[in-house]
Image 1 (cartoon, rainbow, N blue to C red):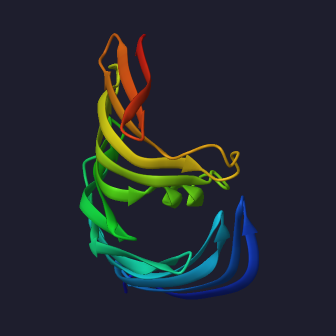
Image 2 (image 1 turned 45 degrees about the horizontal axis):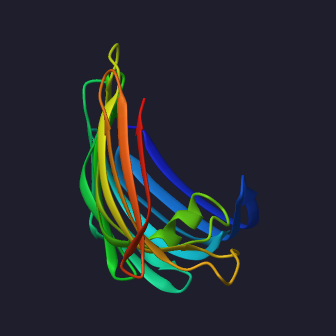
Amino acid sequence: AGTSINATVQARGLRVGGILLGRLAANAQLVDGSGKVTASLSGQRGRLFDMSGEALVEPDRIRIQAGGTIDKRPIKLTRAAVLTRTEDGWRLAPATIAFAGGSLQLGGELSGQTTSIEARLQKLPLSLLDIAYDNLGLGGTATGSLSYVHTRGDMPTGKAELRVRGLSRSGLSLSSRPVDAGVNAVLTRDRLATRMVFVADGQTIGRAQALL
């Protein structure tokens, strides 16, 4: 007979690192590495969140659908996250997250030989970063693209082109004002070049360049 898993987990009031989970419920029904896993959770890390999702699991493929709210604003995978097994790792086909009028498209690969990330942002609220970095408190929206590739035995390379509108941070003095920022960066095998421009009220208030 094949290997089967039928498991249910329920928990309340858990603290995992900096994440406070008020509620967690999960169920897995798998036979010979195939089946379905469902989960829902709510809690807080910088922002309140309430999420649910399901994963359709096959030995060489996992398809994830998820959605919910962050700070009572809807967030959803509008294009499912599909993970496909490679020879020594996993590849993520481009998946799209929609949040508060903005979106993030993310794809890449994680294997013994290669780590790569491709991301495209469209008016993505920076408040989403509070989930990863507690109390960061950034305001504004980001549009642009990011790419990064690191192949085993070689130096990493990458590129970033970002435009941030209304950049601000809560907790700063009342005299501070939102600014627009542009960031261009290129990482090659032998150097990192960056250029930044800051604009407020239509006037350039700062520039920075670096070559490392």
